[in-house]
Length: 262
Image (cartoon, rainbow, N blue to C red):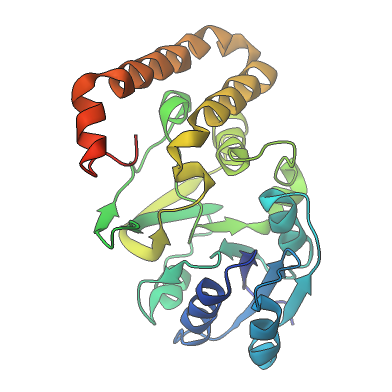
């Protein structure tokens, strides 16, 4: 019998984070899901973690991949469920009833269901981050909806394509923008945090800001050509951030350990 939900975790050399994520998944009160883990041929003991929890994992694969979205696509292609939820190594569900809450809020009219996130910074500080209930093209120019913990109809990937593996960082943003702004699929926002998100990935590293902006500009130019004039908005945003980063005040605060994320 086909499962309603697949939880997909990807991992590369994050043994401790992987085990935290697995325990968060297997301790959920809702049990009727399949669990898929895609590992990038880790060499830090992650494979031993997969072996340790093999009875709790429906499908595990450890092999070299070409990037994070290649790994995610492998998870999608091996899923047999109606919906997928990504929870990558290091991320955890807020509590043991998170999946039950998601399942209770499945709406036949919504193919994407997203929620608030609890950001956990490297310092240990935590912050609940919320999102708007209505998103449009203008919103996606400068932001996105969360990827961790978001319930996505697997049919969307079959109908509109998998994650673009030529993108290093923004392919989930591009996917959400495409299906919502181009194909007008229905979505739903839950005003409640579902996932503890470790704020230390590629998209959160300020060193990758130029890559992020280039990927976004290239995608908009390719897929939304009639809006290419709005790329100036991204250029303006980039210049403002650069200007702020060059200010003496910001440099001084960074030396003191503040403003680490701009």
